[in-house]
Image 1: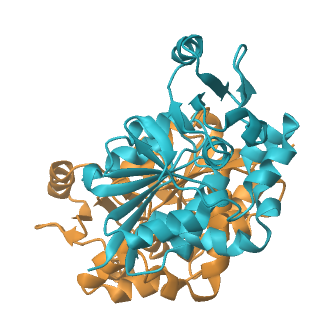
Image 2: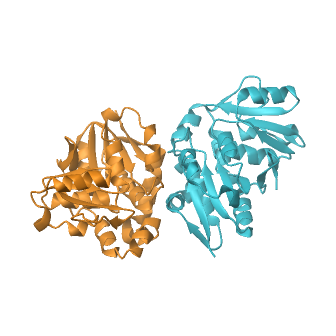
Image 3: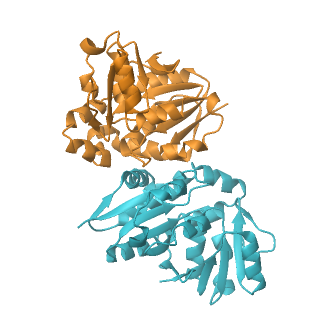
Length: 235
Length: 235
């Protein structure tokens, strides 16, 4: 029997998902939360806890956690890290437990925590995500974090890339088909395509072009971040 | 100064639109409400009033209006017409005032009635819509009716087609860029692409392939349906 793939193109549409507890959800926030999460685990961190508000993150910092995050794309005062994946080097994070709070990505992880399995997706670990899904038997939800509930291009492109790379008998909903076509157009020059996006222009204005170039790389990491006991760990 | 084009890919996201009273909204429900509306006016009807519920439509029928519509894709008992554009021939509708009620399209017209101008879009009148928008100076919203608040492929494709055909200095939001890429992939064989959509499969199951073929035709009508005094009339 074929499995369904639903793409939620804005978190506001997440309530459309039924039987969440029977589905694998991939949370997607390419610029930059989920790319950063993949990088942190790839660089050897033991776990990352994502929390919704800054005060909670600060309290955890006082307990000894390394804390990172952003609000509106900007670093938070007093945190150890911002939301740039490039800050989280192996030297700084290996074997550590971290805490991360971001504008959109964290909210989606919280929203989908009732899923059968919650994975963290980025272009960096595209094949790890797809190979794992192929090996499972569950229906799939691709949850795009967007930007303040608006559709964004880079998350939709990754949803499309995942649909494109899956290998098996899947039934794609219309949002998945839409993202997939968009990825067909973009795949040869992802970075150039992303330059059109509103979020690119927002981040680029903050001088973060290097982050964006980094986040556009496909399959440079083999991690498979998954939520276990309220923490994101490598599968 | 460039004008903005925002695509609302599901009616649930419509509340994101600000300054509605300063924007042109194009309501899009390709299968079939807006294709049917274009056809009714192209065949000479004086006006079409869209109403939200069946009882209201029936009361207007008792007042002498010709009444058409559907619920869940099916014709309503006692109505003069269903929602197939092919039923509304010139012989039956010329110089008449009609009433239409449909599942998704009517709801969107109601939602957007506070716009500076509300237009009805379909593939059938693509150029009329785009030429008119090019001639105006307002920002633009493309409102996809979808299917019960879910994204659907055919409405997204038309939003993409409109973005593609507009000719001027426009700034497209990410949802518009996404739809536009999807249209690039589909434009050479729209009908084949639409066959992938969930809605196609739903209507096709009702034996309505002819409607769908009809609705995929580009620029066969030159009407420009616009909302004036609570009725849709030719501009």
